[in-house]
Image 1 (cartoon, rainbow, N blue to C red):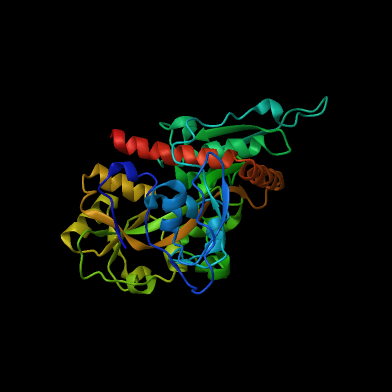
Image 2 (cartoon, helix red, strand yellow):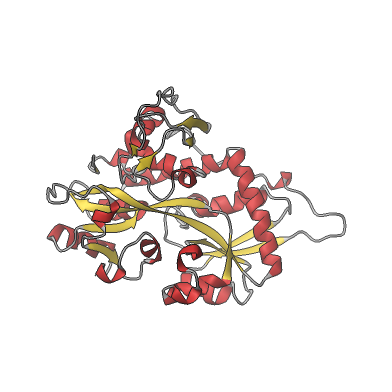
Length: 370
């Protein structure tokens, strides 16, 4: 099943890539998931479930399955094939769309305070701009990832003040600013799977610098989807292996290491000058798919006025974004460990789900308004 992207009200939450299918039959079905609330709920996958069905029953809209897939822990359970659900998989259902009307208050007064005579700790962090909804100065509190960083450090045990600077030079952040200790950390970064690459010299050259960094637990889970033109009857692909044989457009300058890890041949990619150029090639018939992060693809297709002509295929490549510290900086790595503790706490206490739900809804609101 493919889902049209013609209704703006569904765009924000709808990073649709697939109708996922259960791999097992014959097991008695569990109760359907309850309707969502303002809190996170647990659910065990039943016979016949798909993420679209679960989203429809719990969140009220099948287009919102990415909110379930990207919630912490769910992608780890489902694995790298979001087209497949197995009976008994434990999933967490995020809060209802629209139930989080404002960001939770980060109360620094409840953080551990330094002992008498000790100076308070300040952690200096750098990020970039113009990558909504993750980091963007025009968004509330500078974006989803930025707010997660603040909340996690606030929930950690070190009682640190966090100063986050926005410097819109992503390359300089890892090649100079953090490496030379002008800042202690940077975010949000995708990191290579070294179990796949085995050694840093096998990575694409621009990625090799990332081997010099330690990474946090995932700040957010992401979904790269494959957009296609509506009505392409010749695109009857049934698996990601079929997609790999097609003409896939990826914009110049966008990383491809995640696609290599998923088994794609980089030599076979159609390289567009921009996301807009890739979508134009798609409509001209010189590309079969456009591979983009779901937020980028939805926003660009909307801005181009082609939402009625573009749909998401049933395939995706999942990913994660991280906070990074230079691997040889012991102090920064200690702060990274503390951040991980705080991150686990805000996931457990519901603050994380409120932040992510708010920004998913904000993405939808902004598409409707524009």
